[in-house]
Image (cartoon, rainbow, N blue to C red):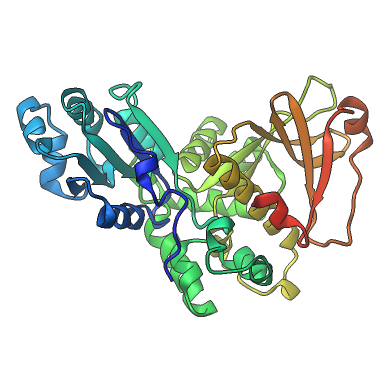
Length: 376
């Protein structure tokens, strides 16, 4: 059974005179999503890829007439791996400005790369979406809630990349994750002119993997990888824009005790995190289950909010004397807080400092028994 993605019906997102941009890490299913849609659409379309040298040359040129001739006669232009095409933004602007009926969809695996190429030319002419590894709600098509809970250990160890989820056994899952890390994880980053060594990036990611769920000090990271703080900060930003990690800042309303100078970093997929440090041992033989569960819940919550277009602010909260809350969400001026505890036996209360300072906020505990209510 093929699992239908959240954005499977691109007709709902496509608009005449605008470019739909679907971002996402490599191997999350962007090409499959596009091809599956094109198999059923009644629109007359043209599908190309940025890996094609001829298309790269044509759409990367400023040849106005040739670009218009390329798109003439179609209702839909689809371009996969568009981040490979230099000047793609100008070409797409020419197309949507002169063929007002036409619809355009492009995919890209690097938001910093593709965004630079389409940003200014397509101001007011683009719609952007992110496709993540499988969202638990997508997996409900072939699983009941009970079955998803039964597979929680698998999700925490191997993540949710489509090919990994479909793999039949542990050895195959580990092999696929190893290939993702070795062949795809840093592919876009290493094309960036200011990235010199993949070894430094891997070292940086491994340090983040071992600090999962904790605040990260850029000064400490810079000392361990031998780079200045500014460079480490830039590398982290690029890793985030390449859909490898996601940062979470500290919440503060200017209480002197609140920590705001550090961030937490989560992996978009916990399987990638475990592959980086080669840790796939079972729950009985590891001490990071709580951190994995926290990472998993955070990213599934992010998927939920972005797919449902329910936008707000996400934070963690901590004071210098050690009081803390895993997640703080701010929507429409209201504060909701959540503490992640893998074991349902642990039922913490909100910290006293938080309760006295933010008395109107709500507080909930997310555990392995109720986590689906939090992420679906």
